[in-house]
Length: 170
Image (tube, rainbow, N blue to C red; front, side):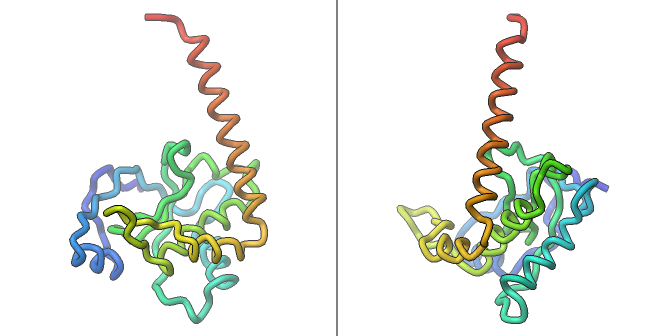
């Protein structure tokens, strides 16, 4: 069953509590949250696989929940929702055309946000620090995953542009 938009967070992470104590206002999830078991991928299984391969027993955080959501991929393919302690992955990636390593890469990226807290940059938190990027580079197929996602986005944007060009003027 999908979580309605704007529903109050069912769980709050220790990290979220830390951010609130530091004065940050955390927003409720604005996305429709869908079950983690999709038509092609089960995000819980992939999350467990990524955890074992890259974090394991030394992981300094509890694993967050994970789910599919329509994220409007030109903005993000995956997000870590701090207040809900949940990783959301773009639902359109749940298909046979998506390589499993792309989903693994996205989950690795979001889990690293739990290890590498942001630094302050001109008053805003900077999440993708040099240390964060260095650790993300441990993902063997990271460049392949980024390339696949870039090509996918390009294809989607071209298709959207073509549809807009064909649309009748109103």
